[in-house]
Image (tube, rainbow, N blue to C red; front, side, top):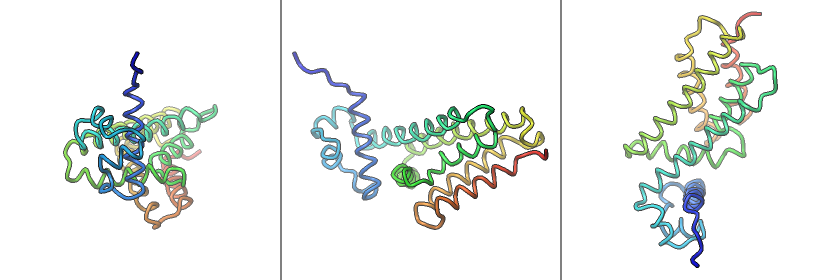
Length: 200
């Protein structure tokens, strides 16, 4: 009896291979042959999972976006009670900015996809959706802080979320190229999150 193939697991393994190649050598390193070798599958297996290279890249960026979003939500869920809105916001911004050494591969891959999205409408659409979801998460966190009285009640949550998301996203590039250290990025995010705090 032929062995059952878990295509979802195989697609994720191929996406991980794409990300590893991009982190090591850039977007131009993503060839069908190299992806197959890195994922330890045949070229035919890659072609059965993805009809085109663009389809493979789209799945890979969604894979990274899911990881970043899940990491941000996990940091919200992990905060011990009582849940400080300021601490939750800071943790979430750090999850989005990817400043830590263990986040470096995802940060490199994310930046490569952002650059490629300038010439790929389907990729740009995926990134827009990801940014929308992250913005909505930040709006919720700011609203939570306003409900508990920790944040200024008159702050415009949507505007603040846009500014904080742009800051966190920009810091990804600054840390990757060495313009800021991870510690400096954390401190900057902490200061901007603290601006929302209401006077005691």
